[in-house]
Image 1 (spheres, rainbow, N blue to C red):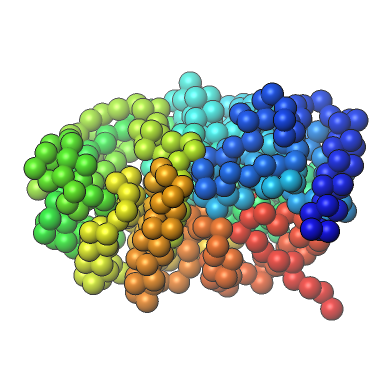
Image 2: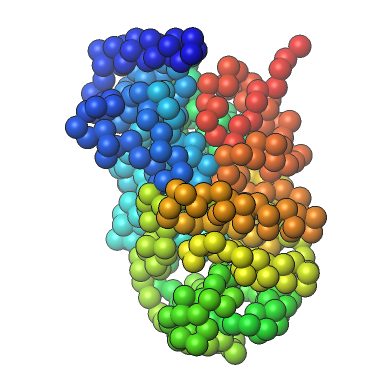
Length: 466
Ligand SMILES: Cc1cc2nc3c(=O)[nH]c(=O)nc-3n(C[C@H](O)[C@H](O)[C@H](O)COP(=O)(O)OP(=O)(O)OC[C@H]3O[C@@H](n4cnc5c(N)ncnc54)[C@H](O)[C@@H]3O)c2cc1C
C-alpha cells in the first residue's frame, strides 16, 4: 500500500517535469485518447500506464529520462508494442512511446537506409520498396522494428541475407542519463556488439542504419498435409533442409484444420500448413518450391510482390487477442518430438493456436558466434508454440497447453532460445538464451546502464564490480 502511494505521488512529479519541456503528445488515464494510445498488441497485458509520452524527437526522450531517473517510477519503452512478454507497458508507470519516430531515408545507390526507432516493419518496407530494396525482418508487417532488430530478427529473408541485426551498420542511442551515443564498428564497438541481439537493455535507439538488398518479387508455394503424412513430411524436411539453398525458406505451422482451404473432410484433425519461399532466380525457384510441396494437398505456387508477402500473415495475429508463447531450438528433430507435437493438437483449446517450425542455418549460421550478442546460431530447428485465443476466461487452459507441450519437449531441445519469442515468465532462461555471451553482456550493461534503469525486457543485470 505504501509503495503504491509513493509511486503515485512520484508519477505526478514526473508528469509535471515532463510537461514543462515536452513537444510530443502526453496521455494520462482519463484523457480522451488514452484508451486508444495505451493498449499493446497482446491483450493479456491490459495495463494502465500513469503517463504515455509519445516523444516527438530526441529532446523529448531526454526530457522523459531526466524527469523519471531516480524517481522509482517504472519505465517501459515502446516501438510497435508487440512484445510477446508485454514489456512495453506497465501499471502506473511511464511509457516512452517512440511511434512518432518513423522517418525512413533510403540511399538507393549505396543500398542503405536510416530509420527511426519507432518504425513498424511496414513503414520500412513501404519506403525501401520504392527503390526495389528490402530490409530482412519479420513476417508480420505490423510488428515494431525496434524490439525485433534489437533481439535479433528472423523472417522470410533471413536464410538468404542474415538476421535483421546482422544487417545493422550503426545505432544512434540515448542512455539512461540522457547521453546521445553512436554505436558502430568504430565508435563504442562493445555497445555495437551488445545491441545486435541484447534487446532493449542498453538504452533507447532513436535511429538504425542498415543495409538493404534487391528484392521485389518472390515465389511462394503453400499447401497442406494431414494425418500420417505429416510425420513422413517432417522426416523428409529435416534431412532436406541442411543442404537446401539459402534462397529457400521452407517451414510449417502445425495446427488443427479449420475445415476450409480444401480440407472440408478434415475439420479438427492435425494439419501441417507448409510455406516454401524462394527469393532469387525464377526457374530454379519454381523447381525447388514445387519439389518442397510435392505430395501436399491444395498446392498453390504464386509469384508475388515482396509487399504482399510481408502482409500475408497480418490478419492471423490481430491486435488485442490473447497470446502466450514458449519457444526452443532443436539440434535434430527426432521422431519422438514430431509425434509429441502432433499429439498435443488433440488437446489444443483454441483453433487459432499453432506450433511454428522453421529451419534457420544458412546466412545467420555463417556469422561467427562471438560477432554479435545474438544467442545461439548453431542450432537450426526453431520451434515456437503459440497459444492464441480470444476469451479471458480461457487464459489458464491456453497457457497450460503451451507449457505442458514445452515441458514434454524440453529434454530433446538444444541449448538456447530466441529472446524475442520468450514469454514474460521465463527470466531464468535469459542466461541460457545468451550462453557464453552472458558475462560479456553483463559487463557491457554495467558500463552503459549501471543502475539497470532499462529493466522491462528480457533482463541482463549489470555485472557488479568489486
Ligand atoms: C505478431 C508478431 C509477429 C512476430 N514475428 C516475428 C518475426 O517474424 N521474427 C522475429 O524475429 N520476431 C517476431 N516477433 C517477435 C518480435 O520480434 C518481438 O515481439 C519484438 O519485441 C517486437 O518489437 P516491437 O518494437 O513491436 O516491441 P515493443 O513491445 O514495442 O518493445 C519491446 C521491447 O523492445 C525494446 N525496444 C523496442 N524498441 C526500442 C528502441 N527503439 N530502443 C530501445 N529499445 C527498444 C524495449 O525493451 C521494449 O520493452 C513477432 C511478434 C509478434 C507479436
